[in-house]
Image 1 (cartoon, rainbow, N blue to C red):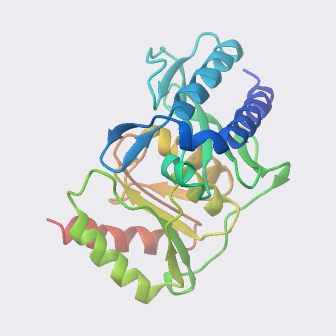
Image 2 (cartoon, rainbow, N blue to C red; image 1 turned 45 degrees about the vertical axis):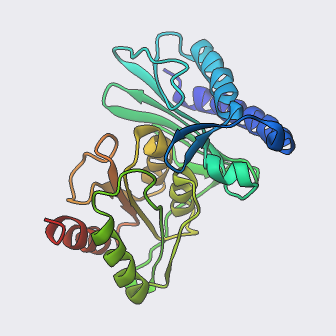
Length: 267
């Protein structure tokens, strides 16, 4: 499989759909929004975006299945599966607040081999493919060499529906505010991740995540030099609902601090 060529085609697709979403944003006030869950909304734009993306991805890799947020396609395949979030940061989009992004990853067996995140408002396309580097609009990107938490700027997200460890999570946020340069909550996990990949943030952590939230952005981070795990330091970050990502110098300190607050103290 020509990962580079397919990745380039996915970038073109993400840009095309992103431009359409941006142009349609002005119509949002007249759209009937339906409740998808507590504090989690879906518009007709999510669904139409996903339908367009799925149709094109079927042409690129006909044998692939899908893990797609809006479930317009739900059939899994044996070897190849696309993981798609057609509009990450829907609440931001509803309110006209950046960032919002399109996130597309291709998983081959147990390995992600292509990741594309298109941040719509800034017209920035982040991408990576197996055997290559990580890029943003054609320019190579890399994570920071931030040495420790004291010097770091971290990105995170707030839970929408899973409040099972909210109290230790809030305690960790209070602690990290005192031991870092600060925390940023942008409202788009895919954007948080690619901002780590390009050095705008030094690390990222969150819980309550779904595969389509993190698949593409995390792969781009890895190709940009980042390390990734769940809060316990294991490899169950794609389906396990919790993730920590950072450059190699910062990673272990960040992961261990999260484990202390969110695993040990939460028990």
